[in-house]
Amino acid sequence: MWKVFWDNRGTAIVEYALAALPVVLLTFGIMQTAWIVWIDNLLTVSVDAAARCGGVGSTTYPCAGSDMVSTANAVFGPLSGASFSANTCTNGVGLIGTYSITFLFVLDMRVTAKSCYPSLAAI
Image 1 (cartoon, rainbow, N blue to C red):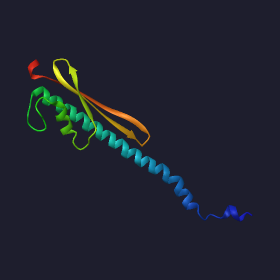
Image 2 (cartoon, rainbow, N blue to C red):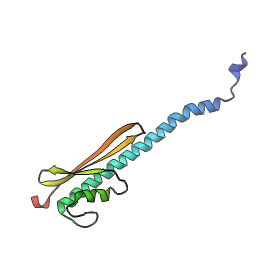
Image 3 (spheres, rainbow, N blue to C red):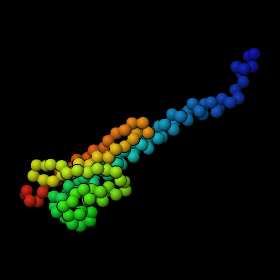
Image 4 (cartoon, rainbow, N blue to C red):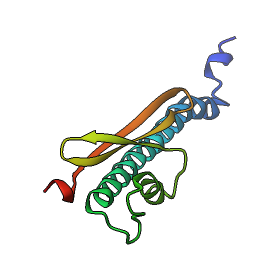
């Protein structure tokens, strides 16, 4: 009867199963956090570039004249699904961009970036 307590066959797989789940969850959490930071940065750069293009009135790439939404979509190019809308600024032009993310397949969240650039006509 005491042999059951001294038998240690199979303990490695049990220890691996107990340790692997937290490690895998931590790894996926780090990857998802990096993904969210990258999307937030790309969204911020997109609305900043589009607002600058609208304020200056540039037509060089990625600017598309006064259409800031198409400029923001061009800069946000590696991804799709972001929604951009014009933002009312004091003495300038602006843009708001939003992107929806599912964090770890459980939590739905939305990343938002807002930009305002002074218009050359206002200066």
